[in-house]
Amino acid sequence: MARGQQKIQSQQKAAEKQAKMKKQAGHSANDQKKAAMAALKSTCAICKALMPDPKTYKQHFENKHPKNELPAELKEV
Image 1 (tube, rainbow, N blue to C red):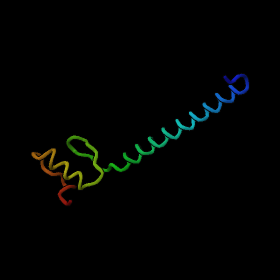
Image 2: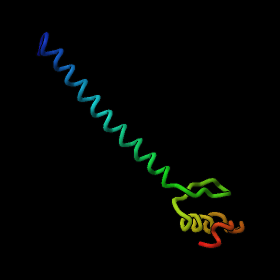
Image 3: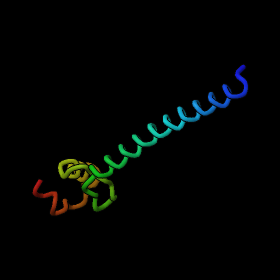
Image 4: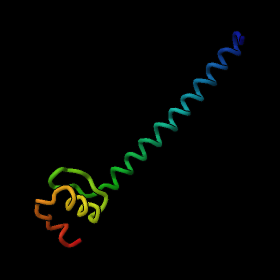
């Protein structure tokens, strides 16, 4: 077993390694989440679902809300 100075150095090294791993894991997840939210531009007028583009929004509207009239911004697509 390590004693004295070796033990302290080992604990410091392990703490630095864990801090580095935690920073890498948390940082990339937040960046991905922000990028994904920025890509969602359209919002369904009825159910408030987020869509990345007008084409997907139109498909969603036709499939999920067939009884409702198509919004003006989707008639052009």
